[in-house]
Amino acid sequence: MKTDQERQELIQDIIVLLYQAYDSTLDNIHALLKRIDDMEDEEDLQAIQEAREDIRINGTVSWNEIKEEIRNESKKSDLISTSISI
Image (cartoon, rainbow, N blue to C red):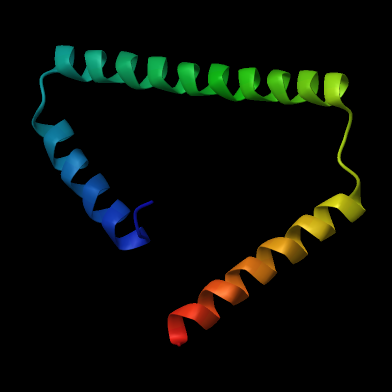
């Protein structure tokens, strides 16, 4: 993921190029960006549907199971940190 400054610099570079582009190029860029946005929306909807289907089939995970998993992960990271510092 880009930092805010990197994003701003990239956007500024894109704006400069857009101002230099022909109208037909701008139309193509707009259509491409719209298609990308639609595909991302479709992927998000697909992920939601898959998650709902998984919950329907496998049930949900209890809060106690989640807390136990977090504790186990914390213990693992503590062991790794300890072994690295030794």
